Length: 179
Image (cartoon, rainbow, N blue to C red; front, top):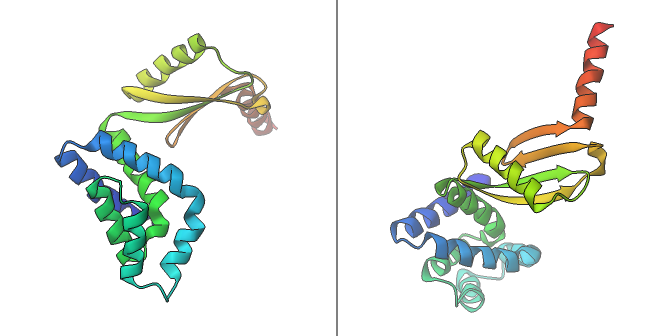
């Protein structure tokens, strides 16, 4: 169903971009996603309940999402009609990917043995941006004592591993090849 989510996300993204509402759509959709994510089970029940017709599902959307921007309300009405409310989070993730690509930005997770200082994060941010050619990174520092030392950086699907654990694993592979 990833393709379904991507299609809804692309339609919303294209409309918001065309109407110069991209940032507003992202902010509102982000808030909705955060609120709806814990309730995905209830949305699935609503989608799959054979006793709930289109009008009932659309009334639900009007009540729950009635204060959202009209474009978001329209999308949720279509989701309700097609029994796709369950895919709200996947649609948001696909929308967020398009939004980040448009703004040449991405999320980065820096794993380290200890919490990094602001200066260390700024230095790593500069290195990552030069390697990835991204304009902006939204960085999270996660503590991972298994690394032994060094850092591991994840940006999208890319992983840059400068940890001692990785160095030891490479060394072990070299020793195994020598045998």
